[in-house]
Image (cartoon, rainbow, N blue to C red; front, side, top):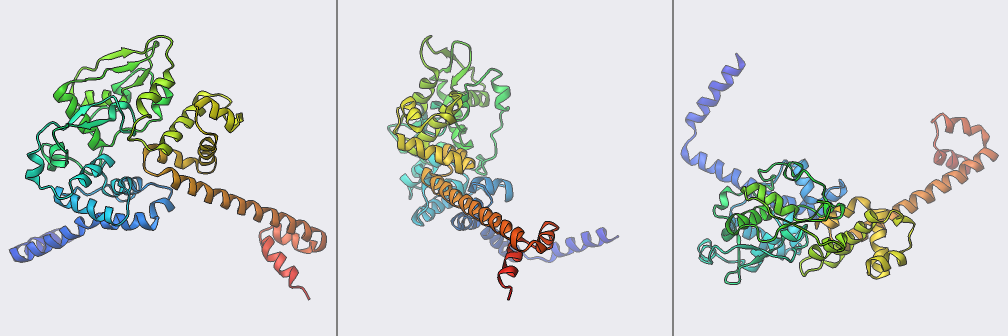
Length: 385
């Protein structure tokens, strides 16, 4: 059988390959895999993911099958090279498949060796009430004051960490928390897997420092990520209830948005989207009214609503940190211009069709039956002797 023949041939080929040849092939294959992040970076710069309506991370996960795990030394090299090439920390994170905080830590100690990092101690993560600006306040990590934390300190065994950004091994959040989640909290993105693992490690070591916050009706206001981390570690979560009379939305925003980690544009987008979810007549209200409600400048409200109108698919990208506010604003402006061009083209086509109906009715049947377009018929009529 053919399969037996090919199998025998494969065994024969394996038997005649020398160790030196095998080593050469392995080295060449390693170069292909290790250089993959450069190809992803090139695609990011060329705008390939965006042209497909995807973020770089979404493009890698859905079209390329995920990220290749990089050794620590190569990860440092990649971060340094991409940073020198002008990419932001957020963009580097998307190219390499790690969290933005991980990139920040690597940049802070770019030349550290494995031993240097291990010698810095194991006080890696402690929970904080401030937020890192990507989701709940429980996502915020502060570094131990005695150490500058880098990758080896973050993970006891870096080779065991899946840097391909696969989902951590934990039940779906719907199974972790069976109750209701406040809609404003629900729009906040989840932590990247590596940072969620860091939070879980902190809770496993030091316990849950900050309880999960509920409102008077048992609706979850803050602590979605802490709940996920508790499920990963088996730590029993503790709960607290927001005192009666306090505003739930104000509380969620205060513990998640107002800190030094989250960029203003991202914060604005979250607040405006929260207002849209809360106010039933949001679309009918003026920018001035929304400005008074949120205590934000009217111009900022207008820019957020501009993105929500012309590039609604980029709102989640801004909130998740995959796209900057200015990039989303520029894309919304391009969409507005494109829509304007389409409207102009449709208007011109309607005017020309009306003219042809009046002055060249003999071509209307061809247009309606698809043998001619309006443009073709107009050109032919204009070119008449």
